[in-house]
Image (cartoon, rainbow, N blue to C red; front, side, top):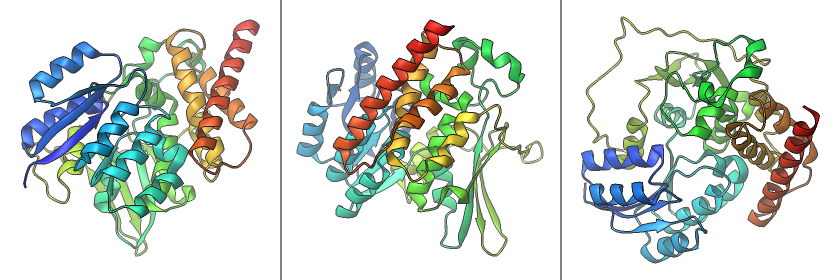
Length: 363
């Protein structure tokens, strides 16, 4: 495979650093740019180690990055930044790149129809990097009737329900399976992250939320399964290692990444559990807002605000789901474009902050 150009949006994050490791190993890409937000020291270190041609700081906005993408038109753009801001960057990446690797769930959660519209205007390939959606992509065929996405259940999965109120950030950040950033680790514990993934799967595979089942699978070996109309179930198994779906996305349809290590099937435990509504109320909200992009944007915005507030000790862990539900309930109306979504995002954040302030005054 000839060397191709790649831009990594969010190079200093968990996905970005693992992507650098994979690229170094498969040696088929020239990294023409990487972005960072505030961690300049790490960015400089990574740029030197992995021969990144240009660093772009996004702390004050993404205009420089958008201009770079427009000018350079990279073969591949990897988008792995958290939050609503990933949506406009994803749209620009699809417009200017031959392939976009998407690790930012929020782009599809908030603006899935905009992403699909932009993709239809171009010849760009859109490949998901979530381990679950990558697994579905590898299993998918036209006769799929429904999907299974698995979940670890997060750091508090074995806590008693009455103990969740006292969970501290240090407790929630101890993920039992994956090593990830702070927000996604907390979202794993509330299973908001899995709610995002249900909505993401709806967009990627053109299915209804009712066709997407989620089960707790603590061992983390089965990432997804597809149910075919003839009664066949195909499962994707492998160790929980994000470098594998990253490599698959980078080199698809080839598999150039080598890691000759497989789960011992004699020892593998393939156990599944239902998702407890009392333990994970925020997860089930995703099914209720499937067709409402305004409420989906509110779902994400409220979660972003709540995760930050929880990390700062302003709210309890169990407040996160309550606040998200309240914010969603206050957002109404149709959204027509990116500008409308930005307005909803801003309004949702303000409402979330108001609810948090109210809680602090009443507690």
